[in-house]
Image 1 (tube, rainbow, N blue to C red):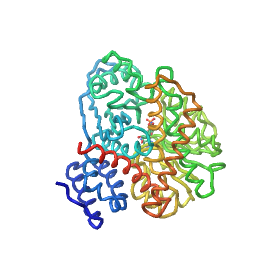
Image 2: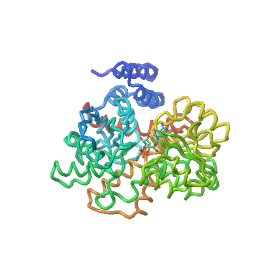
Image 3: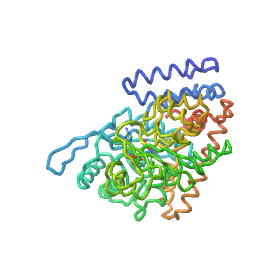
Image 4: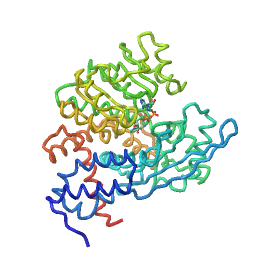
Length: 455
Ligand SMILES: NC(=O)c1ccc[n+]([C@@H]2O[C@H](COP(=O)([O-])OP(=O)(O)OC[C@H]3O[C@@H](n4cnc5c(N)ncnc54)[C@H](O)[C@@H]3O)[C@@H](O)[C@H]2O)c1
């Protein structure tokens, strides 16, 4: 029998859920952080909708539908046997097939994959498309590995994971360390095993063989559209603004490109070995050549660009700017960084990465009146465009780059408007995008779960 949770009992209900997560997922620090961030925003919605608590929606959402962990053995170029650990956490299929990227990075563990999968639930719901939520990856480090080693790793990884995938079941994409090259190797092995050219099983494919125009650029472009829309609420725009971007991978590169298109100047970006400051504006063609083709460090950028300086120490967030786009990794922007950015007059922060700002940094930005766009909303353009890729695959259709970018722009505007309106309706503060994005995503998933019964 279900218990009835009255509004006055909501805070203790949230505490109970959080306590259970902490107990069951002991030691999974970033997963707990992601759950706490969402749960802290949900009080007002549970007050108004006791049916969600009565149906134990939160208890169910915090427990993945399925967690898969597996051995990934492979042979390196010197003939030595290597063993990595692979993961796929299938969090929620309430809105569609599990959907979310694969991350290949030495820091990957179950906690990291669960935090990313949990975030994906609300982000994917917010896009308004028919996609559930999942995330996966491995503690494999592609840095310094030859193409042949990366191929053998990807083949071994998918030889185990393929049985859990399918265009109606679970559809992975890229994330840190997984780009077009890795998706190609994994798709090839999947096709070989199942003997079907099932284009919709992975997104981020090459444009010539089932990929969508504009998918590579979508996350970075979408983050900049979101920043532009936030600024517009204060009668401001990006023209002539100084921007700092962290990271120099897929999301960062195309955020820089779109920021330049909209009239801003990006003066700094980073990688895990330092950052570059380029007062003339980052040269995107050179950055792409160094990062996407040569796969070198940012120091190579500074060596070839007279206006740029490379800093192996210090932080990219010490560089004065109007807008900051953290596009590297989780918890990379802490309270001290936020304080430095605020001192230097930052107006807006849009998270291209997932959870790059620590909870303390978010509080600082909000208290200082800085516009803050959380990753769930600001970086949803990537997965939204992955869903467009799935639509094209299902229809055996190919859309033009302009069609895809126009759709992306309108999806990002809808996410922005919906997050803002939801924040206003539940907290009375339309600028509270953190609450607005989480609540809007939560309501869509919760309503689907109520309709689908206890599963
Ligand atoms: N690729 C997508 O479509 C997508 C979509 C939504 C969110 N994201 C998120 O965006 C972020 C970046 O993903 P990506 O796809 O660009 O990966 P990527 O591998 O292409 O790039 C990651 C970048 O971050 C840098 N980096 C990693 N750790 C760092 C550190 N500690 N300090 C500074 N730089 C560091 C790397 O050097 C690299 O430049 C991740 O948080 C990812 O989850 C990606």
